[in-house]
Image (tube, rainbow, N blue to C red; front, side):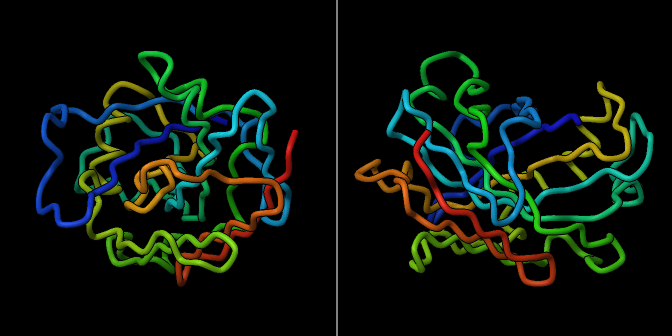
Length: 209
């Protein structure tokens, strides 16, 4: 399954795109062995202590499509689910692309189910919260996404055919450990919960490799 992710957090107090934002979104692939389902453990790799969390809305494609105009983009969506894009920050920053840090085995999660598109008429009207051990660290709204769902589908499908089951992780609010200065990272025993009302609640416990 093809997994494309775009991290577009809006920092606290920002009213527009970050300085130097590229004209087109920067995409990278996330492969299926890096994700687990709801209730399964997230693995902190032995080669790093910098495992971080990112709560995200996940778009699931429902039709074969290419070159989808923005006005028709939501028609190719099968539904939505919740994502926790665990990211190994030091590996993410070692190279020009973040692919390595985003693809450690079982470092992220998605689920617990698919909510069909008719149940989410406006993907820009959702709230995303992420908590670690009961403490809410991310609390954001999809309305603040710099690249919304139609924009992402239009952009990606312009060069890449999309197929049923493809997923797009759409971006995360401010509040990750990295955003907070990296004074701590996820550790074994931590419980990460990402919740999007109307879409689902994703919970995973961290274990060491």
